[in-house]
Image (cartoon, rainbow, N blue to C red):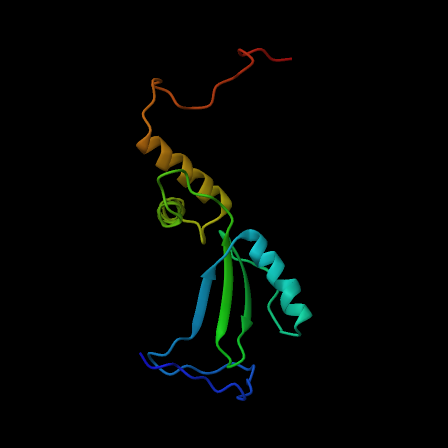
Length: 141
């Protein structure tokens, strides 16, 4: 195999590059929540401009450009899928719930309801009624 070489003296432009059809426009990487929070400080220390942490509903993201102008996104999911399910499974179910409710975008409640629905479909129950119960036996003040 031939060794790859790079131009180490090339200076970066740091400005947006308008991508032609078929070219990469953005690179998104899934990182931990700590990674997203840590990135802002590290980019600041290096003088790299960035978006700050952006709340994207189910994901927190930070955006910056690499030295040749490619947009980089570091993203962290705000939820963990239940064992045996993927983030995509939860988001798909949350999308279906959002559509059923005619709501604009996936919100935290859709994700929570999606996780509950996925578990209910997979996990059997000895109870016919999985609804909420009054733990105090129906007493009131």
